Image (cartoon, rainbow, N blue to C red; front, side, top):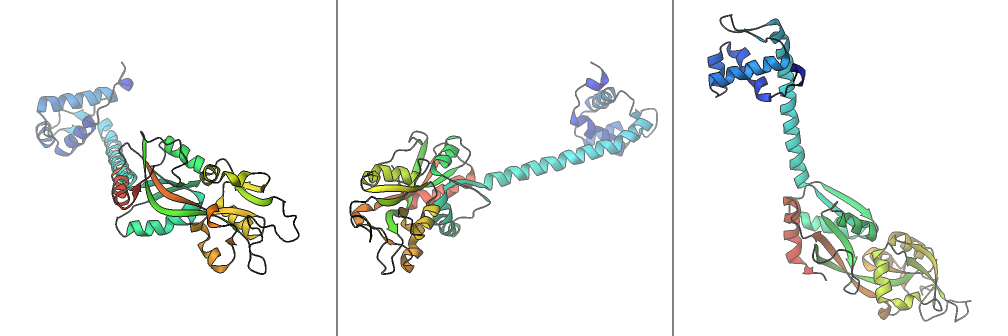
Length: 316
């Protein structure tokens, strides 16, 4: 193995700088807390790696050769850079352990999450948060791939998910209501109401519905709990999306009936911008759940779970 291919031990570099400062093998070995014979072997090994003599042993005190003097600033720079890189890596690791990684469905990330976070911060010191907002199916994928620590989503006992109980656990953090609403007419009555034909429309004509796509968790709940809403003789899908926010906008434009979470439309209901489009039996109570892997998480994530889990209730 040639000099350029020899492995390099960083201790040799530190020993070299100690010798350059002390000018004496014995004092340098003592400063490095190493036996002098071993210290001398380190310096010799470094010279073999460099392919040149770095130390003039005939001088008293020991001095560096021209090659050694040229080598010294580079060694100092390398060791300083490595020490800086080590400290930065440790700081990055510490920050990563404090960061929370969450996935949340679009609607909950914009409605429930901000106020919920404020409540958590009153009980817990929370560092940086990395939030992914997407459809329920996409968020579920992130959990299965272990790319996030928590999933915030709507759920219902009648709707199974791909996050099986053996690998994941969930807690109910709040309640919500999936309710059919529509824009009001000038008389404040709904433009479309289940069981009533709109003005100037044949009584047996299907009502226009703004529906959820297959990727939507709310759509899955709808299909499991309100199968009558998909009867073609009564309802006609006119628009489909997994964005509840978009369905809300379309409903407010008078495009049809949309089943929306009450948490999303509280203000619109209070202002009369949306009104009930059916009796209460067409609404479905739903849970707002926080899901996590059963495997251990970071210290920050476990601290959050310790705050959330006792306050909630286990979700099926």
